[in-house]
Image (cartoon, rainbow, N blue to C red; front, top):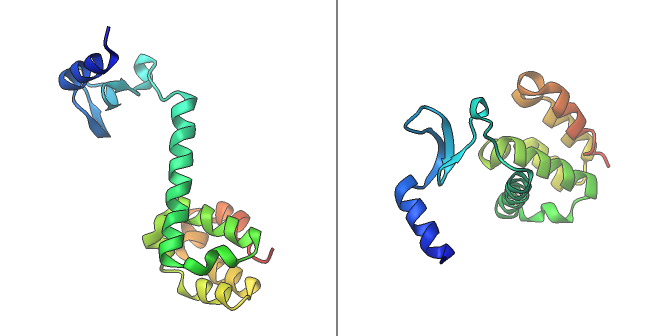
Length: 139
């Protein structure tokens, strides 16, 4: 059996979707017919979740490379915090933290931390998570 022929056949029959969708029976599915609906025992295997996590972290870092290329010269805790923030909120939202970025660029981790805490993200969206992440900025 030719696996490539089988893949082509299955994809032709199932389609290819980048987003979760409901199949003809109403179950959540993604990709090429991969059921993720827990009502039918579906879900993503850990190996796929790990690949997605690696991909998303790489994307978060690439966004930082494009938007603030000097970020890799920061202290390890600051790089860690920025990557975690980029992962969580995405570059479009993170790029709005102008005062935090300016303080980091100036080497003032304490001010960067305070600027990050003075945000909707830290005050309303995910305050506990924000406090844990920005605690690393003073490194």
